[in-house]
Amino acid sequence: MAVSLQAAGAFAELPEPTDLVDQQHCMFCHTSDAPFLAPSFHQIAEHYRDTPNASTMLEDKLRHGGKAHWGDMAMPLPEDRGGPLSAGDARTLVRWVLSQ
Ligand code: HEC
Image (cartoon, rainbow, N blue to C red; front, side, top):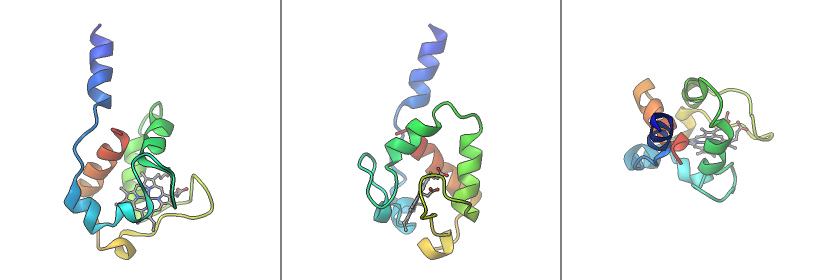
């Protein structure tokens, strides 16, 4: 019982951090549920659901880049998306993506 309640809480969708999403143009390439230029946020959340420390890896990737996991096209760096991204903001974005 305790476990299932916890799980429900962890997967409840968080509100969109709209200012950050706009500033970093996330929706230019992503949508929440249909793969477009990039995997959908729903696919990404599914993919990492059982991966421990996925959020740490993704926060780092959002801020500093890294090799592509989904195809040939890697994500542009924050500087090319609209400006530098702080650790706290990266965390907010990743938690939101993984909640979808
Ligand atoms: C210019 C297009 C573009 C923009 C803008 C963009 N992305 Fe992406 N994103 C991609 C592509 C392409 C991939 C797949 C890259 C890969 O295989 O790692 C991706 C992958 C991801 C992943 C999964 C990374 C992995 O290693 O599995 C996350 C999380 C993500 N994006 C979040 C975001 C967020 C949050 C924003 C806004 C801050 C954003 N993206 C903006 C194109 C974009």
